[in-house]
Amino acid sequence: MKIVMKFGGTSLTDGEGIKRVVEITKTSLLKEIKIVIIVSAMASITDSLFEVISRAELGDLEYIKDFIGKLATIHHNAVKVTVNDKEILEKAMSEINALVKELERILFSVSYLREATPRSRDYILSFGEKLSTAIVCAAFQNQKFEAYWFTGGEAGIITDDNFGDAKPLMNITTQQVKEKINPLVEEAQIPIITGYIARTQDNVTTTLGRGGSDYSATIIARALDFDEVWLWKDTDGIMTADPKIEPMATTIPIISYSEAIEMAYFGAKVIHPKALEPVFEQQIKVRIKNIFNPNGLDTIIEKHPWTNTDKIVKSIVMIRDVAMVTVSGTEMIGMPGIAAKVFGILGDNKINILMISQSSSEANISFIVPRGDLNNIVNVVESALLGSVVKNIYSESDICVVAVVGVGMKGIPGVAAKVFKAVADEGINVRMIAQGSSELNISFVVGEENDVRTVRALHKEFQMDKFNRSVSLI
Ligand code: ASP
Ligand code: MG
Image 1 (cartoon, helix red, strand yellow):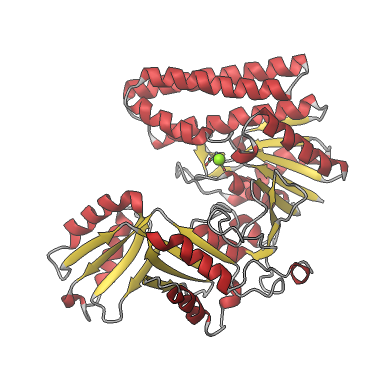
Image 2: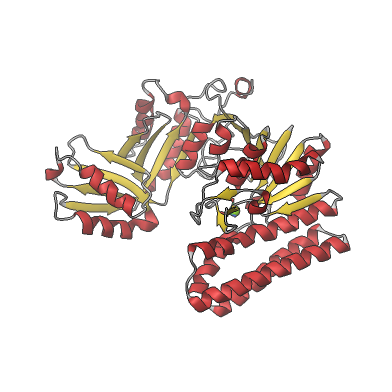
């Protein structure tokens, strides 16, 4: 059995977290499982790197110095807790110091230029993973494992140069990853690879988008043709709903690749939206496991969608940071090309649209966008469209989207009726509805004040607290 294990930032809060990573991996190694490890940056480090880039662009040297000091301390502390072998400790400390020094120099140059290009951003962001991976590697060596660490690029993940959201070039990646990593796996050594970061064919550092370590893990698994990918997070697998909203939420035993993609698309923080692409064809199973409860329930993501449970609806996802924009005008009725125009403008401005609906009278089109971009979006749409057939543009930001996801809804009549009856029985007004043509989800908009009640009503209606695990684990 060969497994890629990925440890996310929540597994890596401090030295204790890193020790847990080693312990968990050890259990599998004792069972003669071959392992490649992917490591994210320590908790919240990537966020803080984004922040320091903005400060550097303002020329805030004091902030940079203070940041660098704190960054060094966090990583020094983590390594001191995990490593007691003097030689390994010294080597890891000097690796950390060299990385931190280099990062400081780069941040100073950004602050003189007052500008970070997409390319230099990615380089700066890569330090989070390089620091954490160096420490995790030292922690394994400290336990007498033959472990080696690599950046994603060194391990052979090659991408295009779309900085910030780079796409892997799978053919060359497969070839290079095999060449570099396979010999170690065969020798039962432990390759430890930075998540999130990769490089172009010209050796320039790129990143795979936020949360991209999941993606690194599946890219490596596909390249090496491994059996499974285990993504270690801080919940018992993928839950039927956010347990902070619905205390009755429970672990979904098995879901299909397409359901998981649908959920990720709707912003459920279960997995990077693109991470299942590399493993889909080869049908490499992905498990979501809890670092704090390694023997507890987990979720398997695999091909077979429907043999596994008796549930029509598997998950309820709620997205809060969104706003609704409505474009209207009676002259829009029967006028071809209006929708193309609206969405063309949004596309040209790289605006991400979550949902679209058009009333059958055709007098208005509504769409859902990230709330943070709302002002910009309204300005763009107003200047391009107002005064033509579009008479009004209005927006609302006190809304949220609820998406009900499950492949069992496909072809089963009455699911939508059940969804909306449950919501209506709570006296909650539905403002907009959309159903993907895949029939994997029904999504709708309610006022933000009704968010929790909506999720709970649906959870109850579809009896989602009672998953039939014996059926599901066949
Ligand atoms: N450290 C990166 C991020 O926070 C990648 C990851 O955690 O998967 O987005
Ligand atoms: Mg992270």
